[in-house]
Length: 342
Image (tube, rainbow, N blue to C red; front, top):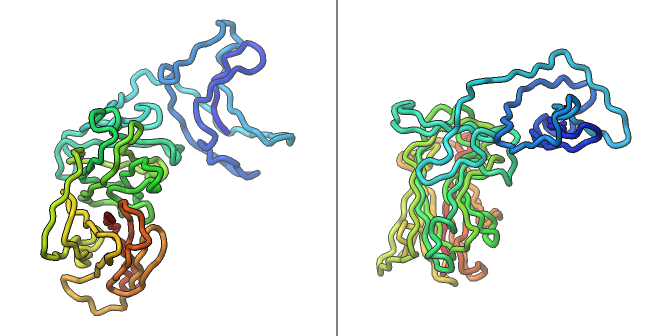
């Protein structure tokens, strides 16, 4: 079902005010549904076809094909709100997508011991293709289009409800990879998280860094220290192999170590094609517990040991993405990682 503004005096000439999923798509029979929706005429740029009493009808529209549909209302109210909180249109280089309509974003002086915080409230109707916030690379770095660039991104965030928080880039060939965050595992509510990461890409005019509505699923999120920088990609080489250490955000006792003799400017391991990607899990304090491991690279489980030696001969010369899951006494902890094959 959806709400529509029918602008025709007779017949139908509607403009949707909500999408089909507002009441979760197909609603089973004998189901009680409740909810509210805020819509602004100016945000939809609605123009009535005439001023007769029969035009501009607000309609609840449902469809069951050729079958009849009967609705029973116990309460249906329309309220005109004079003073609606205005949404920011941008913050720290990121645009708020459809501000005030699908996403409301406000700046807070302080929140939970952090200063200058962005409070984002996305609509629960948003899907994968609906961005909540985004940074348009092609528009902001037009002089670098066609060049290989490195995107460096860092942020602190806080959730009131558990949700997946992931900054992605619309690199179709790489499967819309995550720069930071996780598409698979939600972050717990009630605490601050600090994430940073980088991504190397040949910049195209349509490339964007964004958060999708699918992962948040309506969860309110607070952002602090959001920073994004873009520069031509460069690398530093060394004859000495070092271990890049990165603690799990959900359990700092677990540490992911990746061996690399060469990295990008933001510490992404560079592996020469044909050499092995080598990594292992270590602990600051080894727990006396039942521990299991699962390593995934590019969506496939490749090892169930505490360490991994993975050949790169079959990989393309690009950034590859993985996740390692460490399960301790039945509780899983996950950590995304990435490496570039050159």
